[in-house]
Amino acid sequence: MDQDQDQDRAPDHIPFAIDLTFEEARRRAEVVAALGPDWDPLAVLHAEDEAYALLYSGLDADQQRTYDMLVAAGVLPGGEPGRAAAH
Image: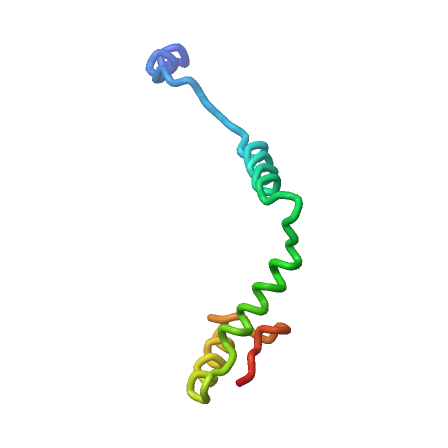
């Protein structure tokens, strides 16, 4: 077949392409704008650390062993300040 015959068999599709980089940047800007001027990311991270420490505080010996095993296996984060709650 020659090139003209190949083009005759081409479907009647119009190529469509969109650069999602611009759309992702716009989406992120909208999210930050929606959070408002009072949003404090450091305060949010600090509150998350406090909640995490509280979640794993007061464990009995068996629970602490299980927690330590999960941290060692990489299932739970550990070894970070506020993340290794002692009982």
